[in-house]
Amino acid sequence: MAIKIPGYEDAEQAAARLKVTVQHVYNLNSSRDDFPKPVYVGRTPLWPVDRLDAWRAAHPKPGN
Image (cartoon, rainbow, N blue to C red; front, side):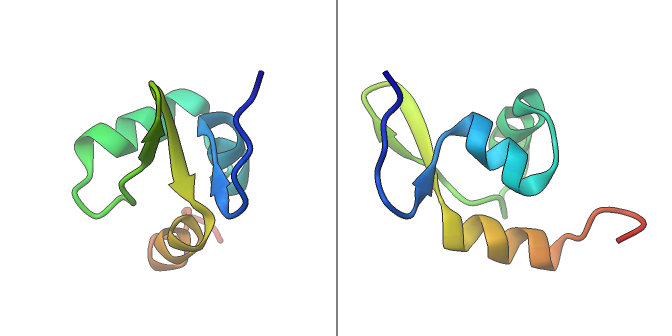
């Protein structure tokens, strides 16, 4: 069962929002100090949507 909290997305949803793979979301989370920190519900990380959007705006994908 997926955890649903308004304003937060799990790794799969965050990957779709950022147009990257789920693995890349986890890699960004562990390797980039400026990537939004998730909130954990149990063992499930959830990222704040507004911070993901702000991060993407500051780090556009090449060609965009």
